[in-house]
Structures are given as structure tokens and as C-alpha cells.
Image 1: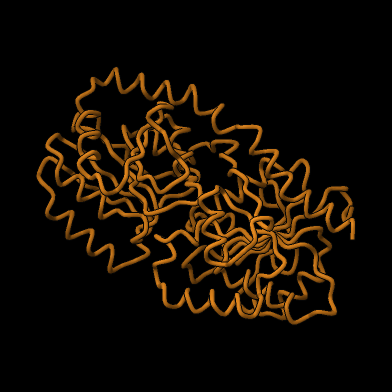
Image 2: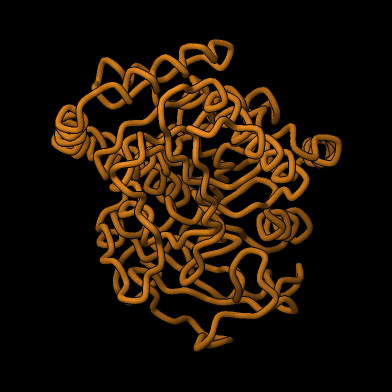
Length: 399
């Protein structure tokens, strides 16, 4: 192979990575993939030198070199090093077997593919592109005119020609075919890895578990953006008659939308108490979920929904829309997936859960924790993820 460890090298581009935590599911599932497959593949992560939305770089990082971060080698890019030419030099100067690009709209992805398009005298390695749910309508509809124009131009110029698409589900496969006119044989469906090791709570961690004696404890943990449907959750809670604590975690990315949600909060009845705690560090997510009776997440669409898996890992049941791959949850004992047109059913489920004795809710949590490990650690997920990379490597070796 191309490196001293005799492992295939997966050169991975992602907008944000460790030690950051603000970019959500794309970063989390990339970390999980590295943790699960690092014994077989050498992951080289190229990423920005700062967290999402930050003006300053991470402290104590090095530049112009690869450094070990977790189970990967990471190369941090200051803003001036993200030009098309700079990225080409990095790609050309890093021996690798596969180029793995995370996010369709990410500028690092676009620039890497632009290099491949204009530098025809350079032999690029096989390319995998993972959109991570960006073609789901709930996500695509945000700033749609701009995205529509980019998709049209990308298709016209063939920017994404001859790539392998990674999809988290058949739903995402259909979205890729619809938006990019991709052929089904170019799409590889594979499940997302769950978190491998739940991190310890840092000694300086700051979060506020809700009290046990003030009603049903419900949590919303996600980016506060229109496609995640926090407003829908608040409208559901506006019809609840039992006592409820509703804690919201996540960055308010869309300020006008968050202002709309705050107006809805101000109109909620006195029996619904709402707290907003802002961003949450990734290593606290599972611990936070463990303090709640329900995760209310009526999302407009998820390619996978890693936060759902983290919630179930904590034993907390989920109440979701039907716009995720997590279906038939009631039959599995994990919660409920309900069509968004049936808001009254959301209300009924919350009321029925609130009516349970604390012992019954504890039994539900124990049952979820006992079952979810086997559900998430499906051997097929490992096999399909390995095959995603190995198929590219074997194809390249056959040339």
C-alpha cells in the first residue's frame, strides 16, 4: 500500500473536525467511522483550523503537518490555505488510495472536485462524495434558489461525474438520483456507525439536569434551523395539559427562525416550562439525553439521524416524524415515528407517556438500553462501510 502502516489511506475532506463540536452530525458520524475502521484504514483528515462559526483557530494546533487526533491524522487549514491551488498541492502531496469528500455543498468538496476537473494531466484517485442528507427537501429548501443554481451548474459542467455517492439509506439514494441524475450503480448505500465509546463527562462540564418533580422531562437537541422543526414541537406542546419541562439544546443558526420560536415559547401555557441552553459539546450528548423522559424531534428530514442513535444509546425513547430512516419504532420499543400531518397523535403520545408511573418509564428506558446495542452494532453496517472503501481501491488497482 501507499504508507508505512500497510493500510489503505483514506484522504478525507470535512469542513470541521475535532476538537470542534459545533457542526453536528456530519462531524460525529465521521468520527465514528474513523473509530470503527481505524484498524483497517489509515484516515487522513483535512479540515479547517477552527470550529463552525468561530473567528479564531483552535488553540495548540500545528500547521503544515499531520498530527494525531484521536484515531486519525489531521491536517488543519487556515483560511488562506483553502484556495483551489493550495488544496491541489495537498492532494497531490499526500499519497492516498481514496479521496472521501463529506458534504455536497461544502466549499472544500467543491474545490477538490474543481481541481479534478481542470487538472486532467494529474491522475486523481477514486472519489467518494457523501451528501449527508443535504438533498432532503427540508434541508434543500433552505436558501433553495442558491442551491438550485449550484446543482444545475454542477450537473452542466460535470463536476460530480465519475464519483461514487455514499447514501445512508434508500431514501437518500432516491434523493441523489432525483437531484443529480446519478445512476443507481454509482450509489453505495451503507448505514452510519454509532458512537463506539461514550466519553466521560469532563470535570468542568456545564449542563443542568431537570428536576424530577416538575413534570415530564422532554428534550430537543439539534441545530435550531427551520428544517429541524422546533416550531412544530412547540406547537405540539401548546396543546399539552400535563406538566412538562422542555429543554432546548443547540445553536441558533437561523436567528429569524429562533425569534419565531421564542414568540411561540412566550405563548405556551403555564404547565409547560421551557429552558434554552445553547450549544452542547459532543461528548456530553449521551449524558444529557440520559436525564430526560423523551426526545421530541419532529425533523423535516434526516439522512440517518445520528442524534437519534445517541439518544437511544442513553435509553431515552424518541418521538419523531416519519421523515427519517428510523421507522416502526413502536414495534421495536424505541419510541414512535408519526407523520407530521397528525399533530394530535404527537399530543396523545406525550400525554400517555406523562401518565405512566416513574417505575414504568424506568422500565422502558432499561428495555431500550438492553436492545439498542445489538440494533446499532449490526454487522452489515461494518461490512457495507468497509466495502465502500475497498471497492474503490480494488477498482483502482484493476486499472
